[in-house]
Length: 290
Image (cartoon, rainbow, N blue to C red):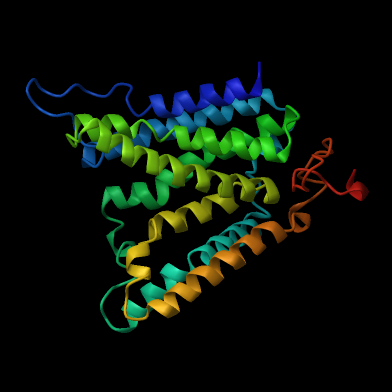
């Protein structure tokens, strides 16, 4: 079966799990919000099951299951590499948080203190885990073994990840009672930044060969949220935060390009697959390991 088709089916399984077995609202009432505690718990269970199913589908179709990126011995190094990259990307927002924290205006660890809140657990822990399993570990190995290049894998996984968030249109219209035009605008913006993040996350997975690199990066990004550019460009120390924002973005690009897969390669964990011509990958062992 075509690898892209399998990836689309897996995305459908994941998104469909959000709505399957969902109880219908009583007559005359609105559907339950995605942030309702009972709905959050139910969705975490269903998406966890869907991500597991996707992983099993991929594991049954690839030749070398080590490509799923679940190896633990190199996980700390890979996770650190992924975290360092996104820290650079968020250098501007981090400097702004530090400025507010030093003045006692904001607690940068506020969300960590709210882990008793099931929506925070979903956003920071469970959400990134199930999404990285479903959209990286379950898709990248399939496409790689099917012979797709790095560029094609990056584009396919990023677009599928972005489109998988378009179902929020239903929530905006049915639950939040927004006009279709307004809801479409919100979904279009979400499609844009989730596709961009999907590109970053897929690159981290591909270069390290580890699920833990994009996983920790995803958790960190979800913790900080989408950058408040209005605040960055208008606060009292705006010239400092603006400088950190642009310098961080430049360093992030350098780090992503320069991320060397060599430390993550091992003859014990990676099979000798045909090389991808346009970029090195942790999936491809060096010649002396073949």
